[in-house]
Length: 191
Image (cartoon, rainbow, N blue to C red; front, top):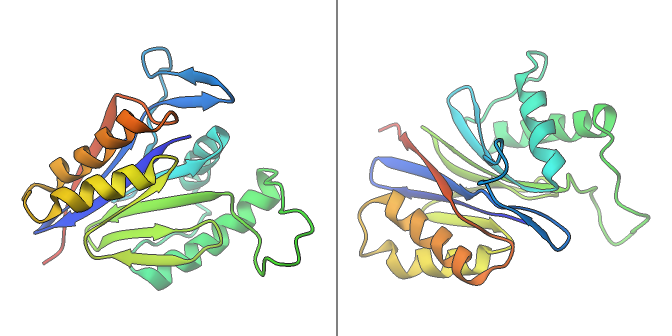
């Protein structure tokens, strides 16, 4: 479980995440886990992922490979990157395909991503829908708390980091799958 957020305000974007790991009923704090970070730097882009803990390691490995074409410039490029990512996860990382569920038109990547870079803030849902956000968004087990808190402070708070922090702190307060400490990265937006 996790909560991840992105915020855009003025000339700055931020991305943030909690650092709690959970395995069933077991909670694993960053106090005990050295590699608890859920933020991944790929070129000049920051990513945060929800999903199984092994997904973080797979993504870090995939994006470290030079053969993985990747671009996070805009919605279309992110979509193309997510298609390639899904294929690599299935072929090389044993991503289990969805069951025989004829109601779903597309297989799940079993991960949702938030992305922040100089071009803006974006989200990739598990079925590879890519959205560009104008203000903020959140994914994960505490997303409803994060969205509510960020909505409550967005218009009166100028610093996007403080908006993201409000969202993550609300998730930590109310969601059992979200825990401190939190991490936040700032990115200057293109004019």
